[in-house]
Image (cartoon, rainbow, N blue to C red; front, top):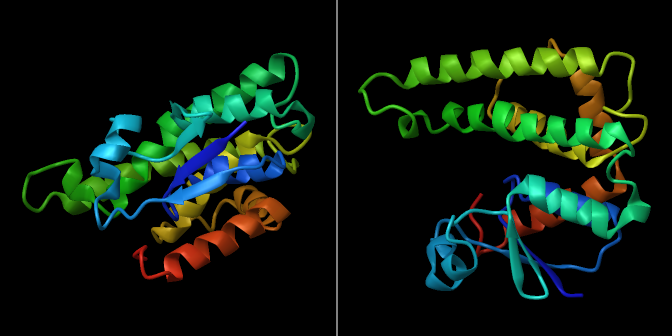
Length: 213
């Protein structure tokens, strides 16, 4: 089986990278250069007309959207235990969907508010509203992680998705110091071998001449 991940540093494509690494999967990584608009190149658009990452190619067949990609990884590599069993599997998928639809959309407005409103001078209002929603969701996560290492009884891909969301908030200089449980969870995920491998790969990609920081 040939697995290829199309990736851009810092983006949510790091989530399947970590998941594949946790699964000990053999996969290739194709790093796109957004500054050179490689995500809009005809070759890439034929694979993914949504022109985003991540994209997973499995024996030449494209699969998009993190929720689908992560479930494919978990079911293809069951020994990695990337999803819990029983009803908790559906709870895990629910939490990942929450990360995708309830947290992720409120991150980018903090650095590109003009994408979300074209009224001059509205940028700070867009940021303020986005951060209000982020804090509401981080409080939910803070409660769920109370006295818990992971969202379930062992590390799962739900932890990976939330890790990326929380990391992006930190990178966008959003004050998350009040969320001690979330910060402790973030530190635990950061120290996993798979995440350290991702961070090293990301740093090398950002340092290369072909990928802007």
